[in-house]
Amino acid sequence: MKKSYHVFISHCWDYNDALNNLKDKLNKEADLIASYEEVTVDKPVNSEDATYIKRVLREKIKSSDVFIVVAGMYTCHSEWMQWEIETAVKNQIPVIGIRPHGSLRIPKVVTDNAKIIVGWYTPSIITAIQEC
Image (tube, rainbow, N blue to C red; front, side):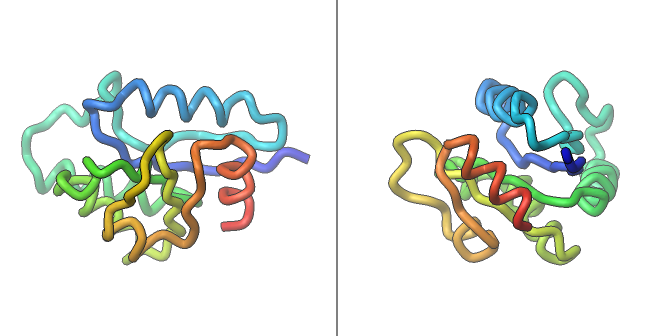
């Protein structure tokens, strides 16, 4: 039987194609129904007020079953992504790190906070979601 999961995917807007690729992989999976909580280029928070944006993101993260971060090295340079990871941890949302294709290094903020780190391989990602 399919189980539904609320998934928050932390991502850098410069890598929107990777986000869409990941969602496509998850949406094609027969054993999983995913609804997505993150803010995207297509559905941004219509504000420049950081406090308001954080409040919106915090609520989306808190309503998630799992928090996924594509763990490229750009993650450690994004204050927003680091804040999102910390927010997930504070709210006891399990963090899943996904190692991008060809990446040998993963940012410390991910290795320190992820419950599990998997490769860019759909069955591994699905198993991680189901086990968290």
